[in-house]
Amino acid sequence: MDQLTSLFKVLSDGTRLRVVTLLYMEELCVCELVGVLDLPQPKISKSLSKLRDLNLVQDERKEKFVFYRLKRDNEILNGIIEGIMKNIHEYPQLQQDIGRLSEKEKYLDQCNPLSILE
Amino acid sequence: MDQLTSLFKVLSDGTRLRVVTLLYMEELCVCELVGVLDLPQPKISKSLSKLRDLNLVQDERKEKFVFYRLKRDNEILNGIIEGIMKNIHEYPQLQQDIGRLSEKEKYLDQCNPLSILE
DNA sequence: TGTTCATATGCACTTATGAGTATATGTATA
DNA sequence: TATACATATACTCATAAGTGCATATGAACA
Image (cartoon, rainbow over all chains, first blue to last red; front, top):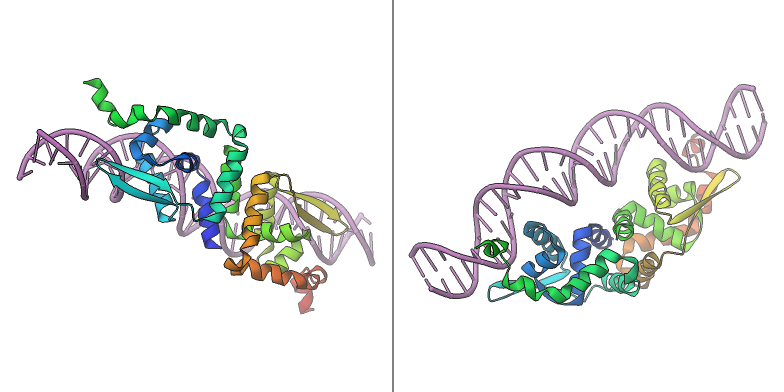
């Protein structure tokens, strides 16, 4: 039962739920998530860390970036996300996040926002 | 999205998850839940209160007792519980709770444990 | 090998949450 | 209408969890 309550606890945070939703769509690196969600990098990293603790995501380094993808072996989680997707229009924030996925290339190149200032 | 995170938060507590699981099986009054789950009455009442806040349960007084039943209009919650039930053997605590439902009559009559001492 | 940069972690602070106990509420019944 | 009893709420305490910021880590590359 602890597996269940831990799963629900990790999903009970808005940021983590947004991250999970995006990773359900496609594999993404940290800076893409930071860009798409427009949130501080440590916040994203901590969210990913908790998801990793529960073995819900898998990370893989590719050159400079660490990519995360959602593991698909948790039936309960799969069901939940499918339920969300089926009625995604009820969750404008999540829907908008998914929409912004199309701009993700924008963030891979300009991962460090300071580089824009130079 | 807050509706989702609130739902997950309320399910992230073991007691509340046990209560929800039992109410999914059948309508129950507070003292039956106390008896079957063998937990302090205020703890059960508080769990029910949070579930009521989210409109997940409905209460109805019948004579001396207040009965709670699970509302079935939350698709996400329905999906979650069905997912749990499908693999109930993975959650021995919940399975055992359901098993103890057959003894629930024992608790309706002896709702107040002090009466046993007299 | 030193520097850059993407990512992770640590820390201080504030707020949220659960546990346990005591007590309040309110209905039913004597 | 007074009492009993089922249920709800209040209060205190300890702990957990999220936030923001600073800094550490560690791989890539010059």
